[in-house]
Image 1 (tube, rainbow, N blue to C red):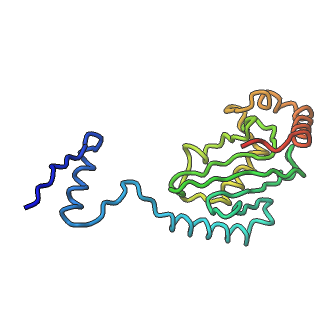
Image 2 (image 1 turned 180 degrees about the vertical axis):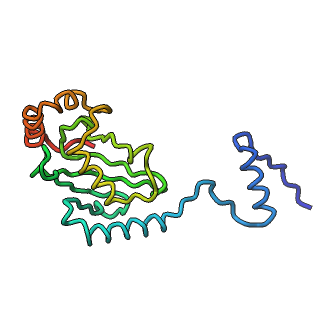
Image 3 (image 1 turned 60 degrees about the vertical axis):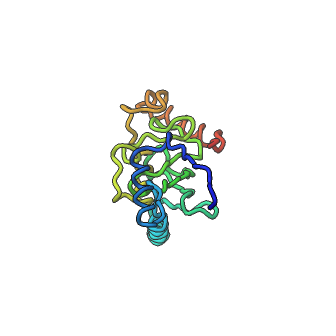
Length: 191
């Protein structure tokens, strides 16, 4: 008869819930699954569907977006300044990074083109409620781009990321000059 040493397992870092799942899996001889497993297939399908819808309808609206490289989770978007706004005739590049639990969480959206605006900081971060606490899974990429485009012409100076732009907003001539200076003098922002 062969005698084997008693092997002990260090369970000090295992939570009671993890221990119960392992015990249940061992009892049923089923593999233990990760607690936060994400089905990226449904997210990928949703993003592909949004891409097709955007390609079919948005050219006339002055917004577009396409995946950057091989990943469907990282896009480059473009918005044109709306007619009659300080941004008319200008085109801005944005980055969109979709989380693995999209559409339940909003994408991270940033200006890559320098943008002088009360609700855009020097790094391209955007203060827009639908990208934060007012996010809804009903929103899609098209909605996001149109909302950012709308924000260009209708800023919220009461919630500024750029206090100088917010203070200058009511002086249309000086504001327009700063928009042009930032746009034509600015470089693509570092991510």
